[in-house]
Every structure is written in structure tokens, then in C-alpha cells.
Image (cartoon, rainbow, N blue to C red; front, top):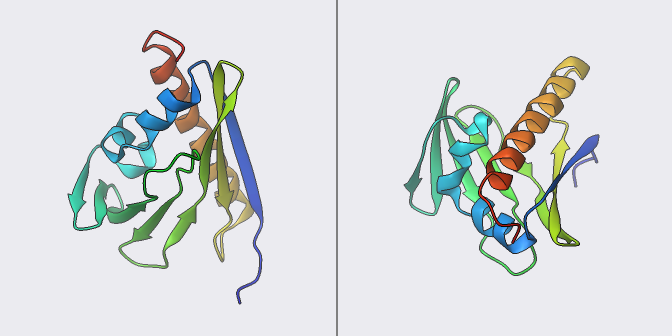
Length: 138
């Protein structure tokens, strides 16, 4: 069993119903519209997706569609271990909250962990702006 690692959960409130948010975020083809870390495009490859990034291709697996708001995904860089990314959308009144837990990777410096947190927060802000611009709240 591996040791626990430092984590940081980032959240953002989105003025759209949780189901609308889930339906958008659970579709891997929508990730390039807001998740800059996965590059400009994703293409399907068997049971996974391939993201072309500035650091080379990443293999990405997404959680199966579900009724619980689970949006977990797993990223496998060209070189290195698979990275687990826990993510959820939950109802918050007529709106929703996205919860994204960033797990500190082995050997990651404090500066890199802070940089990754800032990057995720920017991506979540882009998701919020994109979804709230789509009109109706649900």
C-alpha cells in the first residue's frame, strides 16, 4: 500500500444546474474548450483518449457515465506513472459546485504544486465562464 500524499481540493460555483454541468464536463470532447492541460484536441483510442500536448501525447481515461456526479479521470504521460484526478459536480441550490482534488505527485516541489493549483483554478474559471455564458441556469 502506498503512502498518502498531500492534496488540495479546488472548488468553483457555477450558476447552472448540476446535471447540465455534469453532462457537459463528462463528455471528453468538451475538455479542450476549458481544460488547457489536455491540449487543443482529444481523440478516441480504444477505451481511452489521447491528448496532444506541448509535452507530448497523454493517454486519458474517464470515469463511466453515472448518476452521482463523478468526473474522475486518469492521465498517463508518455513517460511516468498514471495520475489519478478525482473530480465531482454537486448540486448547490439551483446551481452547482465543481470539486477538483489535486494530489501532489512524488518528487513534486512546493513551487510546482502551487503552479499546478493555479493552473487548475484558471481552467475551472474558464469552465465557469463557458457554462454560465450558455444561457439558462439548468
